[in-house]
Image (cartoon, rainbow, N blue to C red; front, side):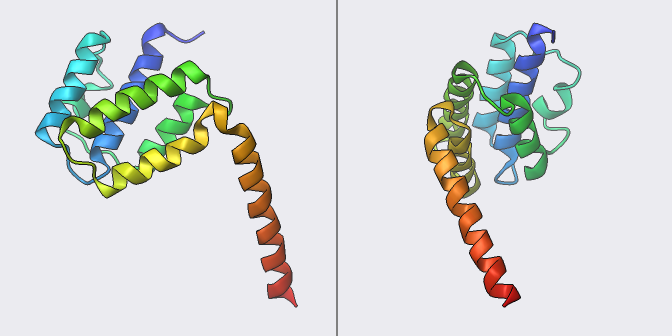
Length: 139
């Protein structure tokens, strides 16, 4: 079983990654991140420290990897809702929603546990289109 703060550390990493999506962490975002880290008891975490103090940037790929790691294959509704709530606070903290942040929120919807029917439908449609395209290419 993982240490209770490891889930919080993973959540903070995602928040930090999202703050970096537009290429820079705004002052308001940095204040919000530190406030969340303090409130959740991970402000002194050695792994988070370089990101919390702007000493290291985060790539989009890292951010999306952390998201998948945090939510897993079958996300719990509570984890998804907590992430969505914290992300909303972060994204709106600087009064500006960057294009990359909006895109991230849209992609996050595919992890919504209540969207399983929609996701399965979308995946089956995508597979059917891919098969049609492959047949068209090979003929």
